[in-house]
Length: 120
View 1 (spheres, rainbow, N blue to C red):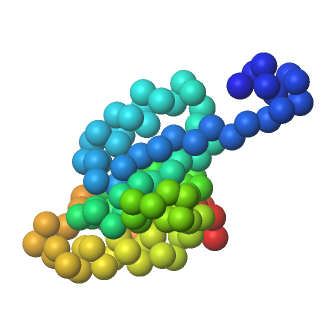
View 2 (cartoon, rainbow, N blue to C red; view 1 turned 180 degrees about the vertical axis):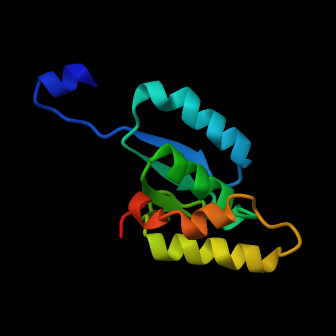
């Protein structure tokens, strides 16, 4: 990264995270990869996730923006720029589908300023 920056070639480091991963594992991954100073993340498997609140809350807590999302098997066709409203809407839809098992991070997502963490 520093070598490319010194040569006038900046790069963007993206951390890829699966939306199907448990929130505790996401938090651990964020801690483990913090030394690499990712600029943002790519969220994959949005179409397979049972909930998103814990994942999004962990990203807000880590102050890691979401640059891109995927919701299918076709890359790059299914790669989309991340937008706050669709992510929060999907998290709310998943919570409504599974009300007996609400994600512990959902309230943090709902009231924690997620707009600061994705492209608006």
